[in-house]
Length: 283
Image (cartoon, rainbow, N blue to C red; front, side):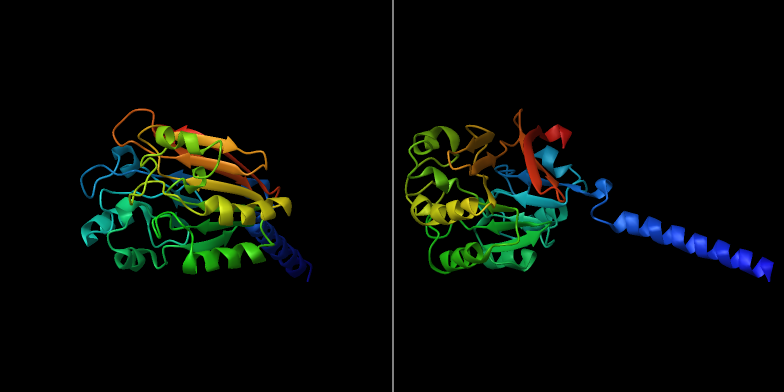
């Protein structure tokens, strides 16, 4: 009886230890698992399908919990399946953790894009206590109107469980109509200011979108807008306005030196999000 009790106790201890180890591994409050990283890359294209910047093509993204793509991935990303297959092999476009804000070079065939991503050109995603809204800045020449505006309003009007809202865009449409930003459009953005499909067009961001973002900020939700249509003039952009809303952008000039990605570090438990521009070779 004593031998049986001993082995029973030993078995119980082994099971309990194994359970504790499993719980520790799976427990999101474990400091080992509180910090996750997100990577923003944009304007990776060359002038020839399907190739992108060679450093990006050689990357592994396994260290990142989410991949945020700011558009203009290839010369004409969605013009054919062979190019989309190439992009998919690198970015895993159908993953719920790969978010893609379409640029003018991605816009040849929206149905083909949807076939690979399983998503519309604009959508939202909630993970790790933050909400990401992906906007389509090619639609309606930079204006967020119609069904997209209805969608944006529905998300921002009901947002209450998030510590942060990330607004992922291609064009830096926030620059138009802002006294600080607008003079910088020609020296910062790839497309410049105008009425063309790739330009920063006159739009309704500051009149109709920004007030919603400001309301969220005043309710205690941190707001970060992340654009992708840079790389030729500058490769990094960062500004915090007087309301505490953050405007960031990163973009690549394929084959040139000094390219970087934008890496976000998220402490899920402490609800803190930080970021830094990091050379592509160090990602």
